[in-house]
Image 1 (spheres, rainbow, N blue to C red):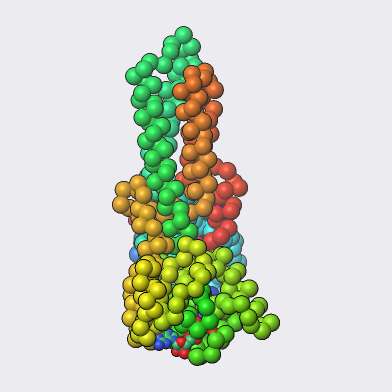
Image 2: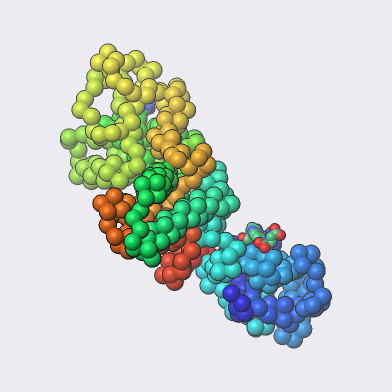
Length: 443
Ligand SMILES: Nc1nc2c(c(=O)[nH]1)N(C=O)[C@@H](CNc1ccc(C(=O)N[C@@H](CCC(=O)O)C(=O)O)cc1)CN2
Ligand SMILES: Nc1nc2c(ncn2[C@@H]2O[C@H](COP(=O)(O)OP(=O)(O)OP(=O)(O)O)[C@@H](O)[C@H]2O)c(=O)[nH]1
Ligand SMILES: [Mg+2]
């Protein structure tokens, strides 16, 4: 990538703040800076040092008193020449400075365009560019940690070694295309087979992190369901630490679902309190119950809350985490053999265990074969890996059944392509467009 036009954007969030950051990148950025700044000289600024300057308007009047940092290509985030201007945070002044950048020859950056350039200049691979976005949107420590690890290139490395291994397979298989009189020797056959098995294990391990990836990025939906008066709203309030939902001794208090996001051992959890489920009820209550069932369907985990002092009734949700509440009132004998968490919202007992159990069920403890690293793939990676898995299996079967090497090389090359897509080793504009357009302007 050379000679890209100069783009400019406000990199700090919109609105009032102490300082705002305006970033410019591209060929000719120093000329733009010289035009708009009072003391800036395009050949006289030491990279990565801070200078104090004035942004001037077209008549030479100062718009803002700013700090300026210059980065010389390739030593910048984008790999291009970059100028960063920190101005006085504020909506009007920041807009004026940006307008001045545009008057002096820059154009407004599109969403994700700085990171796209970083990718095109090989500063980041696609998994790292996605991680930048994940880091910005992370809602918990664990989500941020996963994003940082991906940003550091751990997934990119895993994918790069898979790619090498597949290239090796392709090379082997295609060697036999050039020498049709040769048969694949038993030794080579065994080595190829071992490689297929290894690749499959690696892919299985990575695919095993997809659920965690989705939960960390999107948050997990955890629905609290149960009969009226079980204490669902009380539980939501207790976990939140404030009185969010109405609690009363009357059955059928909650109608609308009540949702709040909180942090369960690093998992961003959308906790959903629902209307109590029972047979009878007014039209309004019935509508509430329909919504409760809907949330139960969509949930990643259902917490089924029951009143421990009452005899067990029919279970509402399959696969739910059963939680007995109101243990302070004593437990009905019939619960004795039920595997369940026992809590008392009233006495605030068992809530930490509940948080831990929910997090455990969400995480599934699935570190998989990712070697202890916190890998958490996203839906796009998952799709690529599934295609790679399928093509590899096809190739392996063909090889086993003695298919001609030129046919085996086709699915192998498909697998190579699918794996290459993950880090962006093959360029399809479509993929790039859909990834970078999700970024914010200025990133
Ligand atoms: N002011 C400012 N803060 C920022 C960023 C930025 O662009 N500007 N970043 C942007 O999101 C993040 C930091 N990421 C960065 C990554 C690489 C380089 C960089 O200059 N890389 C060069 C030189 C490497 C080095 O000397 O360490 C390179 O890769 O060649 C800069 C920032 C967060 N904070
Ligand atoms: N003794 C005791 N009472 C509790 C406990 N948890 C909640 N309660 C009481 O049980 C009653 C019902 O609580 P809610 O939280 O409104 O119950 P709910 O499941 O949300 O009920 P609906 O919204 O009607 O479905 C209230 O009077 C609470 O104070 C508990 O651990 N022990
Ligand atoms: Mg309620």
